[in-house]
Image (cartoon, rainbow, N blue to C red):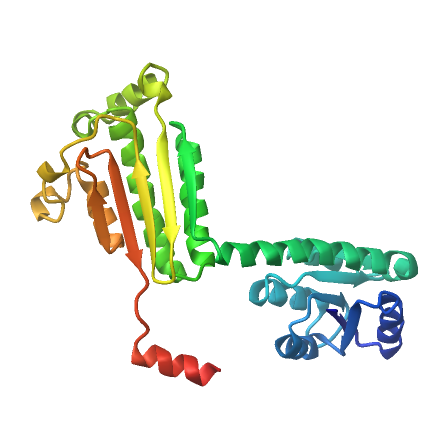
Length: 306
């Protein structure tokens, strides 16, 4: 059964809504008298959906919508609107409410709206559940910087949703992945040297633009393989260029080399991951980031929170 939390400071309106919802035997109705009470009920019962009036005190429907959206993003909120609450309803929809029902048309619209939103929310929850069970994914990307940028964002969010690292570490990992993919694009598939970038930035990008249209560069692809376990994330990125001798790279941590564009990507990849591996040809790099063990302080904090 799906738990539906009905939030309204009118006992009569709560009873009316509950009666309409109970026409579906798979819906279980919970009640809250205002926004503050609703937040307590959400914490206790974690309902599948919140159905709220807008005009309440001390926490109104708009504030409740914002809080639920922030703290419980997988719980959808449906607004119950009435004459005089139209402006607030629009604000609440912009703040993240999933839908609304006018109280004047509750008898015809309420149950259908709730069932539709529940169906969509169930798909969202199942998607998150599936994401947490993902162990690997593969991509084959043409020489398109826009696609590569979207892939970085996807992998960063995926790693965050898997719960391997906190938001800060996921951002650092995203930077490392962006550098690896950019290297595969410019230096790998398009064979544009970073030395040219040091000499003339505009010529560097113009040559890359030209080669995107020329054979054999235009037909080359970037292959990305991401693997996940309970303890680490591993990303292997391979281009179809001739490769390079990574052993001859200048030490990017040497202060004399920090201001040079050459080696900057390698420095960031090494700084933001735990291990960096190249294949012999130099056209494939594997970035490995491991979950940090929980220390005694974190364990004590987690235990106290339970």
